[in-house]
Length: 116
Length: 112
Image (cartoon, rainbow over all chains, first blue to last red; front, side, top):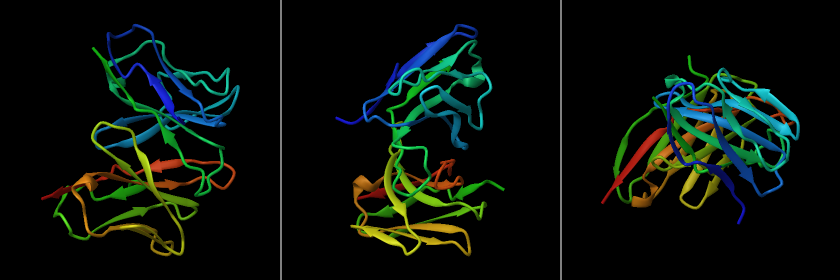
């Protein structure tokens, strides 16, 4: 089954304790992306990757790191989480970096993070 | 002004009703447009892409008006299962690069 898998689904942590949220896709997609979703703000892009070893900042990258060593995996790293990073996080992938109407984004099930 | 604006709702409609949502976008260079559906606390899923000539998928019809920079979604014969949040999504990139901007969503509640 084609899917984007995020882990963990739920995480409660404390300020300053490094954490990693994993994301894996089995569709051989080139493009992967991380978003956060907050009430009243919609989904905002944190980082994206156009292919292996190619990553770039989205709209809200502060406090986050990513890596893309393999095509299928795109982990999100919070080196020193803070309460303002409490949010719902989604990983997404699409076949290519292109912006045409047929290049659909597929989302993971989400990770609900609380930073105390 | 937000880049993509939607009425947050909620729109409360009875089963069988027709309901329409609008979405406006600010970047006239936007290339492609989508409606995604998001159930409570779940991931967004593509409902349909929006083409310039308008397109229909069963009970759902999407329209694009580039001159006025708005997108619409019409749902006919609403079902209880249509209750969800509908996200308007605009690609502000180009055919070689995607830059998706999401609206905050319009919530639909369909009641018996």
